[in-house]
Structure formats: C-alpha cells, structure tokens
Amino acid sequence: MLEVCLLGTAAAQPLPDRALCSATLRCAGRRILFDCGEGTQVSLRREHISPVKIDLIALTHYHGDHIFGLPGLLQSMVLQERRDPLWITGPEGLEEAMAPVLSLAGELSFPLKLLPLPAEGLALAALHPAWPAGARLRAIPTRHRVPSQGYVFTLARPGRFDVAAARALGVPQTDWSRLQAGKPVSLGGAWILPEQVIGPERPGLKLVFSGDTAACPALEEAAAGADLLIHEATYADEEEKAALYGHSTFVQAGQLAARAGVKRLWLCHFSQTIGEPEQALPLAQARFPAAECGFDGLCTTLVFRDPTEND
Image (cartoon, rainbow, N blue to C red; front, side):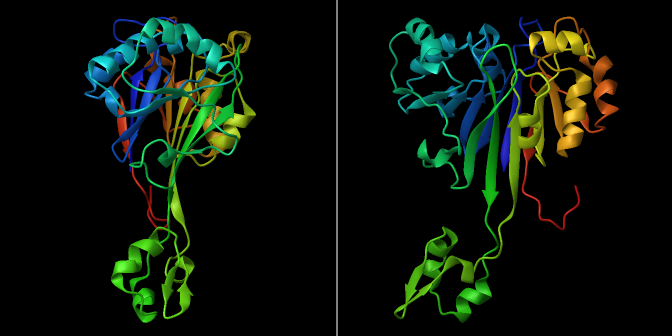
C-alpha cells in the first residue's frame, strides 16, 4: 500500500492557495519527498506529515522553486531532534548544488548523505529497514533547460504462498517466513526452494513523478502501466512556449498518459498564467479521460490489485 500526497502544485512562484510543486510518498511508515520548494515544510505541517519519517529527498533539478525549501526543512528536522540519516538524491551536479543549501542549513543533528541513484535503481531497504524488500526507486532522464530527472517508485508483490504445498513437503510453519522472504530451507538433507511453495509474482504498484520536463519519450516509456503518474502541466496548450522553457502542456501530458497506458494522471506545476487549472482540464481529458487537476493536499492510497479484479 502506498499513500501519495501533493504538497504543492504551483510553478515558479508560490500563491496564497498554491504552494510550489512537491509531493510525498509513504510506504510502511517511511517517506520519500519529491522536490522541496519554498514553504514545503508548511505544506507538510498542514498535512500532518512529520519530516522525521522522511528517509530520502528526491530532487528533479536545481531550480530555486524546487530546492529553496531545503534549508528551512533541514533546520526544522534539527528542532525536532532528528537523529536518523537523511539522504538527498538528484541529477548530475548534486554536490555543487547542495553546497550553499547545506551552508544555509547550519549544523545538523543527523548525518546527511548525498546519493546519486545507480542506473538500476535503489532498494530502499538500504536506507531504513522498515522499507519493504520490494520497494525501489530509480531515476529517469527528462527534458528541461538544465540537467533533470523524474522518478519511478515500484513496490513488487511476491506470489501467493501455497500453504498446502508447504505442508505436503513437510515444511514446519516456523520456516514459512524464510521461504516467503525468498530463502531456501533445509529439510531432511534436501533443500526446499521458495519457488516450490510460492506462486508467480503478482502485479505490484508503480508511481511516476515527472518533475519539470518537455515532451519526453524516456518518461513515457518509464510510465508504462503506472498506477499513478504525476505530470507537470505548466501551460494549457501553448506548445511552442512549453518547448522554449522545457515544460509540458495539459495536452501533452494527456497524450503521454494515454500512450503509456497509465491508470491515473494527476496534473501539477501550473503556471501563474493559469488562474483556474480546472478550466484547462478538458484539454487533457480529451486525450486521457481519467486526468485530474492536482491541488495542494490532494491525497490517495494505492493498493494492490489481483489480475482478476476490475479497476
């Protein structure tokens, strides 16, 4: 199960009712924060989200509206007496971009580690043991005016444990959890393998966060079949302007979601020129009917579904 919450949906400048674009993901009591613009910690407080449970801050790029909230958030973590390590990841240039941020944040009460993600992605259990074994985060290249990347979070779901098969093989119940963890069990001089008592892997969960990007084939490929795609829609349908500044339109976001076959699409990162994003929503819905306008505080819970279940 994943809990996802939009903390802000604005681009460039915060508005009274629209903070700068960021989102958070919760799984097994731990969190990832995607981007951290000015005022993010206020949005966290509004949603009753403790910064102490954030293990990783995933930055899409280093423009101010996506990182200016970091010094204040780090100081708030100190005031809350955080002790656990905090990781920050981002595209190339991470160390240089974080140097002034860390200088402003001052002395920290916890270890802070900069972590470029490996190409194959990161098993999040490496950051904190509470993360499920199947939870992974990987970065995908996106198209912006500076080095940028989006993120794909996946939560794998193992196959069903076949109790009847385990009993038929004589496996003690005390060893079932070992097999469920993917480890073999020694029994009477022979090895019982997990695949003997566990069925094929079932569909997991997939969340994709685009960050700032123009139309991007790599993002489209990565989003294939996602349970939720959070995609920027800075402009309504001004594609030339969007391309000039490295952004997407409502139209383009809807087209990408349709081609990728995602289940849900949340639009965000709205330009100040879009006074009422809902008025532009039909542009996306004409291409992807399930498109929704994100708003600050929009939350959802993504749950596992079996292949036989209908959406």
